[in-house]
Amino acid sequence: MMTGVNVVQVYYRGSAPAFPHLIGGDVQAMFDGIASGIGHIRAGEVRALAVTTATRLEALPDVPSMGEFVPGYEASGWYGIGAPKNTPAEIVNRLNNEINAALADPRVKARLSDLGLAVVPGSAAEFGKLLADETEKWANVIRAANIKPD
Image 1 (cartoon, rainbow, N blue to C red):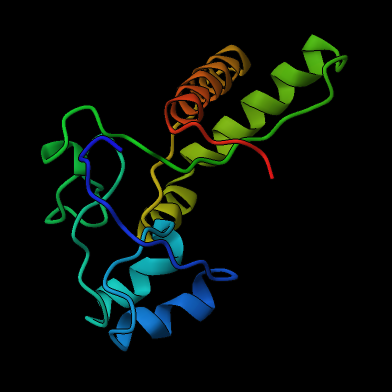
Image 2: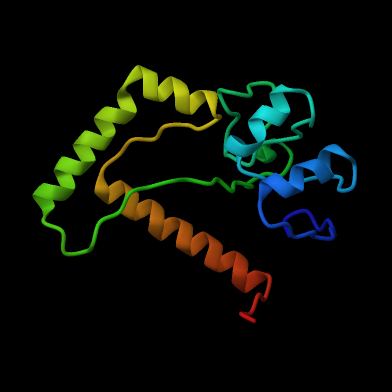
């Protein structure tokens, strides 16, 4: 949408069945999560053209970000941990502190980095803001593309 490029989407039931078609040349390009694709990239089976994060990834420093070609482009996948809305604040804070401590462990950080994932520890409030910001961003994309539910 941001570039005006017209592409034909080919839907697969996940990365595992899609990669053989990319490697075999049946499809020309693929958007995929870094953790499932990094092994193929490192093995030289596919060539990474860009990452969709706002900046280059530590695990693939020679691969540019899409924002270097398409200003303002950013589409990151992320993981978070939630709890029911009525969970007491002291439990939320304890969980948050323990999770952030685990993410700060050098072995955990190194393993996640090896998979191409960036660790972004933060507070429950910061995660709530991320959720709100992402919801707004993708709602705008859905409206601009006039996407309707089936």
